Length: 322
Ligand SMILES: NC(=O)c1ccc[n+]([C@@H]2O[C@H](COP(=O)([O-])OP(=O)(O)OC[C@H]3O[C@@H](n4cnc5c(N)ncnc54)[C@H](OP(=O)(O)O)[C@@H]3O)[C@@H](O)[C@H]2O)c1
Image (cartoon, rainbow, N blue to C red; front, side, top):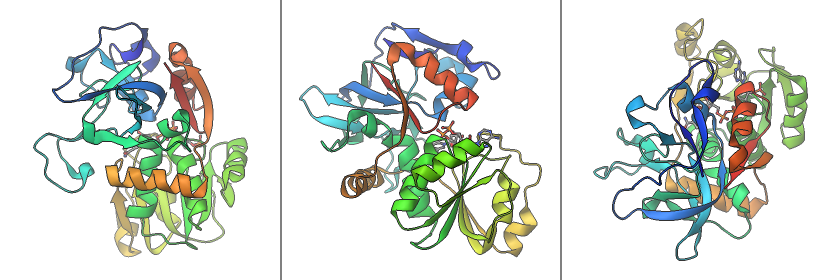
């Protein structure tokens, strides 16, 4: 049983999804099997069904970047989704120009079993459930790196998170609050803003709203719809960290003048390293904070989870259990 892409449909991505049996794919020598106990849905999986980042010659492709499970020798593990090229020698896995994420070149985690390089396994501590652990490798790791490695924001700084209910956004809210930052969020929806406050945000604002004061850093994953607002709300010298462009990557204004005149730092961020994933796991164990899980579905019902994310009808992470 697996959830896999058989094509690409930019307008109706569910048309490209199949949930059912598929011949187990091969894997490079030395990769280890992990029996998947829980996997988490990311917007990446929606992009794949729309044909972004997944070329047709790689179809059919089992989707899913994130998993927690058990190895053949009984170890409980979290799967780091960044697959480096065998000849990569740098220190930071995200700087590998030939890197891929699980489900881009090699089969993903929405299956009973996934195979990964041994170095991509991280110990799952008993304090985290498989479902909680499965939330970490993409959305939560991305949020951790954005906040703690890329933004330069310190405890006491004000951080604006664009969007409230997504996987990355809910992780940013939880981690930022735990780290002593003043956390502000925007949302298109008042009820989702209120949920963000219950999760730890100090204040929620309607998308595009004028803020009481300018902020030290903005966490951007929405893209075109919020780009100008993100630039405008930053203090001089402030930092914008961008990891995604859910609403499109062609904003009406690039805001080049404001970026150099204020002046601002604009920093791209993608996933995170194995070391950052280990630090994130330790932070959750030490603090007791946990990912907010919207719903947990049998893998057989994965299409319902995809549908919820496509319409934006979710708050937090969606889990599939094979
Ligand atoms: N660079 C990386 O390594 C990396 C890693 C993870 C994700 N990403 C990218 O980051 C983005 C978010 O990923 P996710 O998994 O968190 O997705 P998600 O769960 O579907 O969340 C989407 C978010 O976008 C917000 N949003 C606000 N305005 C929007 C608009 N006009 N259209 C659509 N969404 C809007 C939503 O907030 P409200 O509904 O509350 O307004 C919600 O917080 C995706 O584009 C994904 O590809 C990148």
